[in-house]
Image (cartoon, rainbow, N blue to C red; front, side, top):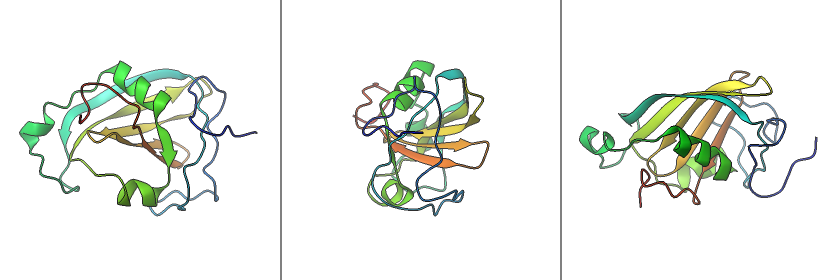
Length: 147
């Protein structure tokens, strides 16, 4: 299956395995931004929004995070515009935020998974087959994100 260069497009037909094999833990292979293709989103559930994470360091308080509210449209926009990045880049080059939204996602091709997007426009998609993909969305313009 050919992989497109640049932004991934939700309207395409499949979610490919990440480059470098089938690593499923947080220490996945590192390297440049990876092209990614997505099937259309069939359903999206927001389970948490305005949540606060204790495992990440930032100055944000639970009260700060309560203001971080992503809508379904914001989440769709995130996965349409974000670029897939490797784990090293995700953790080392983009500021983490304690504020996040999370939920479940299903694609028309049958792939399912969970997602998490933070206030700093970083995201993680964990698919039911064990694949984990990392994203950053500099093009996301929702007022919900950090300015």
